[in-house]
Picture 1: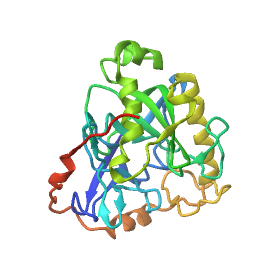
Picture 2: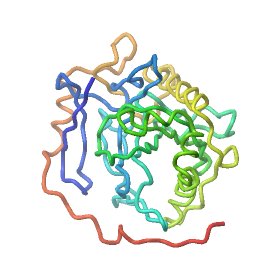
Picture 3: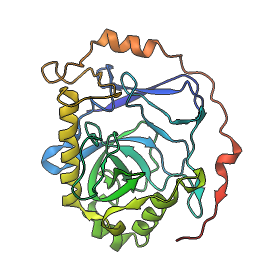
Picture 4: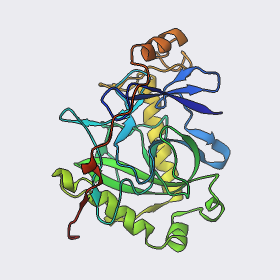
Length: 291
């Protein structure tokens, strides 16, 4: 199973979109149509890479748009870039989401005491390769961090691409601590402080900022998959989310649309055009004392 992307609009502008196609050339939703599992028997999951490591553009699956293309987040009419809090530059890992998952804002998690953040579950992929935006990779799950973002549960799954040369040696969260000393501490630091330059408070964490192991992480992912199933079958109120899909069978989802409808969605956007420049200010470093 393979997927490709199609750029629309002008990169680094409000018009930019990244749509997905399957191996048959059919437009698909990266939120709903790409299977959660790449290999269920081995607990191998698909991840849609939204933000390559060390980059700043806050790209994300547009959960409220038809076919859910990747686009850049916007704040007060301006494109959003993640700030660099010293010593970090851009995102600390390849950042993305597991398809067919959803952190239900109507469900209060028993461990965090907070409701979900209304997005697919996030992943920080820690492999050697800097991935490409829109790349769909297969990962081994290693653990999870329970971040509390402005009162919402926002799980951060730690994983590694199965094709990475280090993947054979990394099987659980303890292996990261053993083979990549300092990486987990740096990851908590990054997630704690990355919004501070935007005037936001430091993020908080359940379990005193400790990572939970692989088994806990997999059960958490399965739970969010259950929430997604309720969403796509209209057993849960979708709110403003767009559940249009082309591959989930009509028997399972009333939101299934035809190939022609999907083509029309893409056709309403502009063809890929000239790339705009990224502001120099995006490279600025911010310095804060750790609390």
